[in-house]
Image (tube, rainbow, N blue to C red):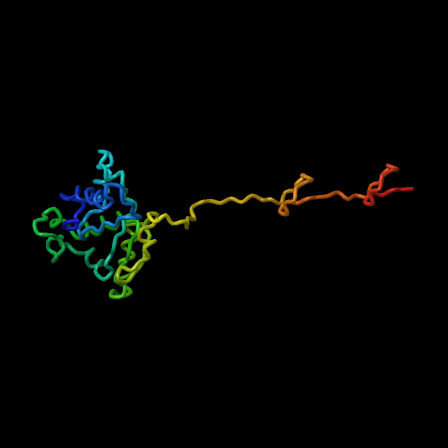
Length: 221
């Protein structure tokens, strides 16, 4: 997206881009990854999308927002959390003329992005020390206890972890599969199912039929 913004003045561009990428629904895609700028508010993106859905925007019938992934720089997260800086004071954090983002407090941005995530990637663990990684992971977990957290280098993560159910993974452990006990006794004489217990009564009760030739019966003479 132009300027990497999908949450403020260019919110409509996200919807237009979805329509263009899918060619109005003619082109099937497994997933669309939207990369926001470092000062974007994921909650605002979701809110804009939901509003467009209520208004019946065509793009919302072609795709839906399923997953939010936040990349956390473990080498700077701890110090950035304690700063009083605003985004406009950081080099290259905002675009010229983007006064909306420039006045945002850095800790406020960090909190919003972490709280909105389904997946938190604690990145640059190869550059950060063990203590920095622990601090970043601890703060992230404190802000969002429901998200999955992964510690990574260079942002490397399996695509299935990144996109989740958007790939239609069959590995779903959320279902409760109940298997019934088939060891109960079966009384059907013609049944040939080996998993059933068949009890046959071969008792040696006395047979009084003089014409009987069944050797399993006891015949007293």
